[in-house]
Image (cartoon, rainbow, N blue to C red; front, top):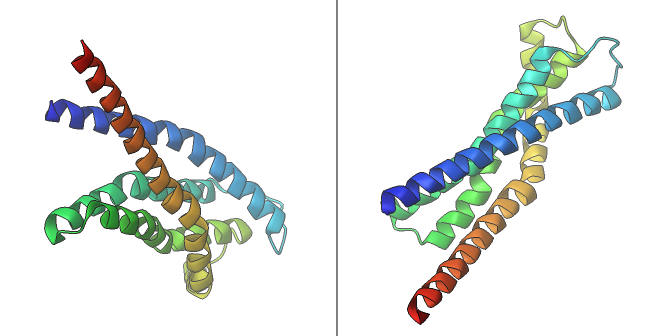
Length: 178
């Protein structure tokens, strides 16, 4: 039963991440393309480079993978290795893991926007731009994802646990009543 339960949970999570990723990542890349065009300081006349769109997709894939896979794994490690309570580990990881991911992916975000704005810029100049913009972009992106990916993910997980427990309780009562 334990193996089947774990397999079912893994299969559910993988399906959820795959479906969510296909929908969200393509829509987010499209949105970021529109925002880049609307808010560019110098309006480029060329189309958004595929490398920029791919960079947006990579950034968003990392955020979703960290939220749906990384945070629960980190929470479990904190519980097993350091004796943290489930609630404290879940809350900590639900906020920290997506936030840290934004810090790690901020250079990808800056690169994507800079590639669109300046197609022919040298790698040295592009790297200088990434270093210059990194602090404010990393902070802004981290603060932006905390409500949706931190609080939203935590709420979703706790509600799912509550509903699953309620369903198990109803099934148990039906079995006992027979």
